[in-house]
Amino acid sequence: MDVVRQSAQAGRVVIWEESARDGAQAKTLMTPEFRVQLARETGRVFGEDGPRHVVFAAGFPAVCGEEFEAVRRVAAEAEGTVSVAAVCRGALKDVEQAVASVRGSRHARVMVVVPASEAMSQVMVHKTAEQALQGGVDLVKAARDLDETVAVDICLADASRADASLMSDYAQAMTDAGAGLVVLADTVGAQLPAACRDMFDAVRAGAGDDVVLASHLHNDLGLGLANTLQALASGVRVVSSSWLGIAERAGMVATEQLLFLLARHGQEFLNTDATPWWTAPDLTRLPTIAQMVAEETEVPLSVTTPIVGTGVGTISTGTPFVHPQLFQPYDPTQVLGIEPRVLLTQLASARVITAAATRLGHDLDREQTRAAMTWVKTRAFRTGRAVVDDAAFADYLDGLVHTHRVSA
Image 1: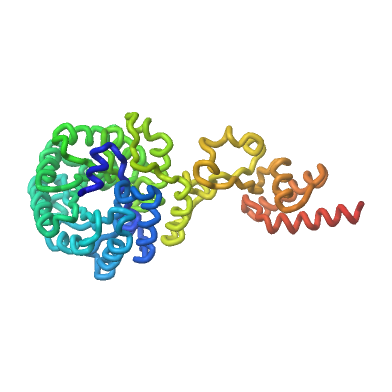
Image 2: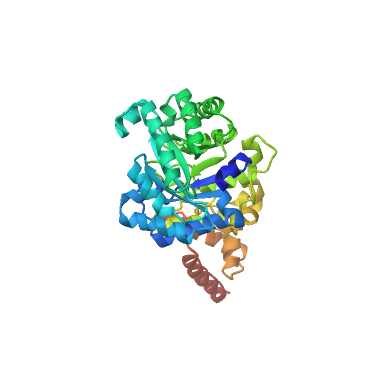
């Protein structure tokens, strides 16, 4: 049973997670051990329904023997927590290799990339778009003959510049041949949201109801998330994303952002009252997974990274300190399990200074608070760093309180 196709047809959202595969094109490399760990942790966001909500693209087996073994290991060791996929080019040898890398794993898949536009077809396979797409149909049949327990998906590269009518016809032909999903890719990330919606609407209108479309949308213009939401609004339920948004060039929509928005605002984006989940995602797992990926790939979380960044739940100025609910779109403690933190910066108010001092075990009077506030602001500008760390502030407070006691 193709649980991913079944989920999409039931109106449930499936995340096609790309950080181990497309993420490699962002000049990152995940070890086999980490890929297994990440696959398991991503699946656990959905509990026992991980395989129905997550396709984990484990890698590109044709790269080298080590990559093949990494994919094979994920397929063997993450089985049952996600649906594991291997990705390959549109060549029979590559398809055979991809199928071999995931064979025997429950809910295993391969995704075969074939060009859809005339320009990309000439570059990738030296054929017309129609010939390339017909080749995709043949590869679906070949893959199904190799192992009928492995689901086969087709990714139409450069779909954003391809003929929608032609893609509709071949999406149907590929589905008739046994494809589980037909993925439309904005390969170069140049599509605008309205055009993205039009593309999915047009292909859906021209293909039969049994065709299950998916999205793979890059972020070169910063529109990966907006375009993915357009695809979802069009009825697509399988959407590609990547932890921290890591992927080729400027990346793609970040898994943590997409999951958060759909969990919190899914019915608004999906234009339906039906639930998009078999099991709703556990958002409290997102910060931990994001930190894992950041450490493995050396792609740092910044203070402004949405949902999982280092600035989430932090307060450094007066009014947000007094009324934090007015300055946050959600409660980070309740939703993500992130405890609020008061940080000392050059913007610190007297209330912030008092709270930080109390945390460090000092009860300051008004005069001491004014002195400490002046010290914090001066130190920030002198060092050129906004945040004053607790250790330095604690040393200052010890001296301040000791001086006060002696003078008293």
